[in-house]
Length: 612
Image 1 (cartoon, rainbow, N blue to C red):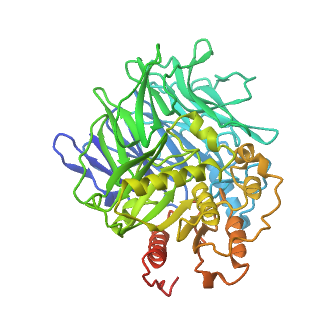
Image 2 (tube, rainbow, N blue to C red):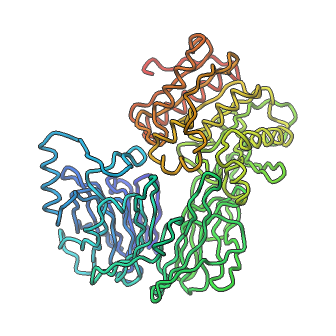
């Protein structure tokens, strides 16, 4: 049985032997997650048709009627299957104090009847991304799905009735025999500091114990998984960032018998993510950015010898079979595809050309319309697109920030990885740490110069800069301090770093990096009168960079005259958060952005539709 993910919330199952379609996309429009059990059945998450909550459905390899085996009054967020037995561990939201699903449903009904959506908070975090936290809280449940599976079977086992808010935004794993569960949990310390610890749970007895050193307050743990033999846990341990230094990440192995842990040696300067242990137990597998690629690596459990298993492209997910490793791989101009680790797919004729640009140790991608790499007539306008994060990199395909949309419109697109970007070593991150408009801005200009030298088809007098979040902040600073760009697009970006760090949903993190800005007064200086036209984009539900940042900038753009006279525009999205997720809003963003760029780079008149 082969599982192919065919689109957002769309699952397609196909029999590998007969190539017969078992379940089509139209049959699972309500699905939003799935997992493959060891016996070939598929567990599917669906939104409940009974007015809220989630349902677990079982799909059989040979087709036939799907069966709902469990209904949760709250939302199920994640599910992880055991490897050797038909069981899954799910993270679901439960009302505080509820001892079972009946009590959970009763409390939800009582809240609904009360007619209030108010939440009384105790911790420092009020939001997580655009979600308002509370009053329900995540817990872990074990669902035993051994045959025969009857509809609406006994409730799954609640593994964490004590959890409170400690499982918010945390990751977990389950042993192959489903007897043990490991999870990260969060503790709020003075500061506030959100510390992530590593906790082991015995399913049969409910006994739990920490796998980290209680005195190691400077470290956090992420993405744990069990070894195939169930005797150890592999995860990422990070030394928490400070005002002077970014976080440092390493592979960490905890032995369950002794409770002791140690760092796995890795002979390359990489930032590991999503680690697992190979089926034979010889190597640790993990993902990491490296020079514009996101590769799957293997490092020896004994000697730390590290090698890349994949070449060009960005691996976003991987899985082990009995014979090989499969990956989901993409690049900035090619959508994700399922392939064997190390396999390369040839470029298609209608695909944008992707050129690597380097300037010393710096790197960037330059995407060009198909067939336009060669030429000296300087006819293409250039869009310099800055990534967010800031601890991030341009490696793979993004639906919301889609490069081919702009290459098809006739633009060359430069995707630089300035200081703070991942994949270029720890020192590259340190160069920009706490100084967002210092080394990162210098690096963007260096890569821009190199791109103009590399691609003689690009017009150096028709350049625009665009970015989101950190990239939007950097784009605005470049527009303020240089004359290299005719216009700019600033999306979901902070404007005043001090107030941003104090009000962001991740303020506990940004305060450590941007502490020097916390005492700065609100921006008092006028923006340059010569500031090029700016398209400001922001969602009203953004909690990572609160909407007040955009409103403050928009008011500053009004100073000294009407923004309309100087070409500034504000695309306001009342129902979006930090990223644009609704299809209609994405269409509006692409239409307005390409129209804005065409107006200022190509001289084409742009009239937005009247409904905007």
